[in-house]
Length: 386
Image 1 (cartoon, rainbow, N blue to C red):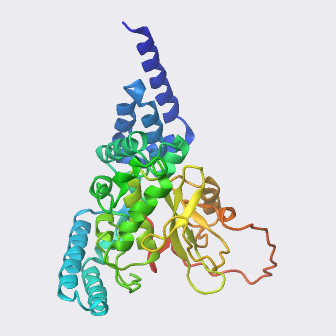
Image 2 (cartoon, helix red, strand yellow):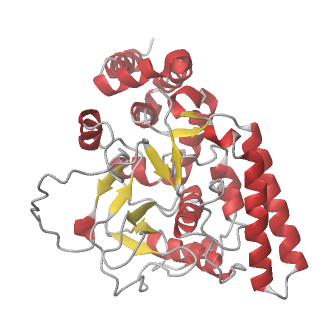
C-alpha cells in the first residue's frame, strides 16, 4: 500500500467534504435541487486523483458561482433558430455579393422574420444551476485546462485569473451553451500558429489576440450597424463568426469565444452609458504577459491600437463569471436595483481607464422610477424564474 497516495487521497476527500459544507458551495448545491447529483458527480470525479486538485478547485469555482447565471430553458429551438440564421446569411450574401447595402437590408429583415417564429419560446429561461449537466461541465473544464497548461498564450496566467479569463463555460447570459470551445478552436486562427517561431511573439497573449482579431477584421464584414433589439439575441459563437455585421456586444462575445477557445485570456468590458450621448459600448480586453489588461475592439482595432481614444468614459465595468458579493447583498436589500447594478456578475474597473473620484449629490425627495423587471437585455425584458 502506498501510504503517501492514501494520505493524499484522504486529504482530498476531506477537502471535498469541507468544500461542500462551505457556504457558497453548499448554497449552490442546495439551489440545484434535482440537478444536484450532476454537480456532486463532477466534484467526486475530480476528487479521485490528487493530480486533479486544481481541476477540483475550478469545478468548485464554477458551481458555487453558478446561481444567477441563466439560459434559455430549451435547446432544440435554439439549434433550429441559429441554423436558419446561418442558412440565410449564406444565401443572401451569395445572392447580393455585389451589393453589400442590399445584402445588409435583406439580412436584417430576414433575421427579424426568423426571430418572430421563435419569440414565444425565447421567453422561457431558467437558471444554469438547474440546466447544466455533469458531462458538459467536465468537457469545458478539461478543454480550458488543456489550452491553459499546454497551450502557448496563457503561460503567464495565474489560477485566479484563469478562472475568469479562460475557464467559464459561457461569456454572457443567454449564450447558447454548446461545445463552442471545440467548434471555435480553428476559426479565424490567421498566423497564430506561426508566432511561436519568433522569440518576441512566442507565448505572447498580446500578439496572439492581434493575430486572431486581424482575421475577424479581414472577414467580409458589411459597413452596417445591426442592433437586434427586435430579434432574439444572437449568442452562438459559431453563428456570430458568420454574422456579417452586428452590435458591439456581438463582436465582444465573438472575440471572447474565439480567443478563449485558443487559450488567449480575454474578458468583456463595457460602459453602460456615455456621458455625452445616449447608449453605451462594449469591447474586449486582453490580459497581457505583463499583467495588464489591454483593450481592443473585435473586428476594428487590435490591442494597442486606438479605440475611441477621445471619448470620455464615466464608468467602466467588467463582466465576470464570479458573483460580486457586494452587489448580491445590494440586490437582497433593494427589490428592483437599477441597471446595471441588478447584474451581480460585473465589477467596477473604472480605475483601469481613468482617475475616478467620489461625487455626492443631493437628490431631495424626487425618488426614482425603476423598470419592474429583474433583467433588461438588448431592449427586451425577462422575468427571472423563481
